[in-house]
Length: 368
Image (cartoon, rainbow, N blue to C red; front, side, top):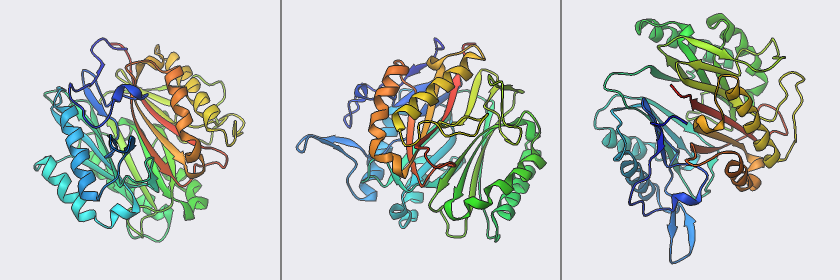
């Protein structure tokens, strides 16, 4: 772990005893600050339970108070990426969500993403907010661009339109597609059979080394006519592929991981053998989680790091893996060390292959 990297631990955080969990509330690094996804979950003493209960307005109030208390002890200069994970019920009050966010941002223009989650890990939670901050006085190395599909009929058409729009923005920034280090895609379940058709679009814009990537299946997206949503991470520094595997399927249009400066962007990993196409430990979320972290460690070792270098994880949990998800906490505590990386947990409809319970997307920071 970088000696200048540390967990953000407010002196007063009345909602939860963060020391009980296998994630940090926030993680400070010299260039970036990562906040875990925060909901309104808090300890309710009179009921002796942890709950995120309350109206959307009440939950938003708690979430933003949490965020303000954490970021107050950081050295953050500006927001790089503001992500809202929203349940279908909360989406019905999207105006309240937008107004509350704008009040918090105070006219700051930021890359902003809203993602429709089937539900959140706490079933009573309506919204979860994750933020990545820049800690430098200048704009730093990273940029985020987030796009949703428009009113085209097919997934391929919507994906093509997204890439055309991003192509224009990248050029305006004086960058090119080689600067893209990671993509995260959300696809609607009912058009999953069309997803392979987007590979030709990626090949049209990307060339080897392909960026890291994660593809997640959702029941629906924010708008009824949206079939795909993609957010792109760009780095101003040159990128290098990190690939410890002897075999990597030639049809895949993503890399296991990408190194940009001292940041490592690792594709969403699941218990999947990329050489054979086999799903491993089908239906067993504990063994799948352990396998994912061991593969993550293999990737990090290939570039001189280890699991101690992880600063951010996002867990995408399939609906049928949710009942057993709490068991993954002991895997994190066994394999990761304090201070734990930040973490966000999102429930999706399913993952790309049946039998997969969890997929984990990771960012790590190497020693300078």
